Image: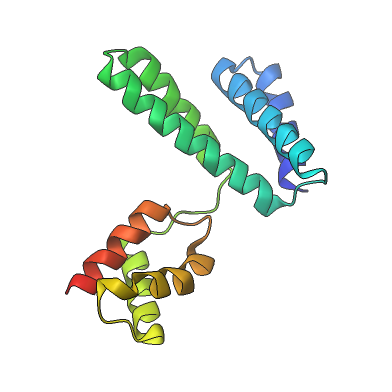
Length: 148
C-alpha cells in the first residue's frame, strides 16, 4: 500500500470515528499532495509525499510560534496535535547523537577541518539524512563539530 493510499484509508477511518482534528489534518494534507501532483504533472512517489508532509510540519511549527507569541495557546495546541498526526506518516527522525555520529563520519570522509568547508560536509551528509532529520539541526551539529 502506497503512502497516498494509506492516507486516504486513514481519512475514511477518521471520518467514521468522528475524529475532527485528524480528519481536517488529513484532508488538508491530501489537498497539498494533489496540488504537488498538479505542479509536478506526474504521480508522486512516497518520497515526494514525505517531502510534502515535512513541508507541512514546518508550516505548522511556524504557526505554533506565531500563535504562542500572540497569546493564542488554544490554536498553538491544535497545531501541535496536527503536527503529531503528520509526523506519524514520516520516517523515524534521527536523534541528535545519531546525527552527530553521521556528521563525524562525513567530516572524516571529506577531510574537512574548518567552517569554510561546511558545504562539502553538508553535501556528503544530506543524502543520508534527507527526510530523517531537520536541516537546521544537521547544520548546527556540523558547525559545532567543525568548530572543535
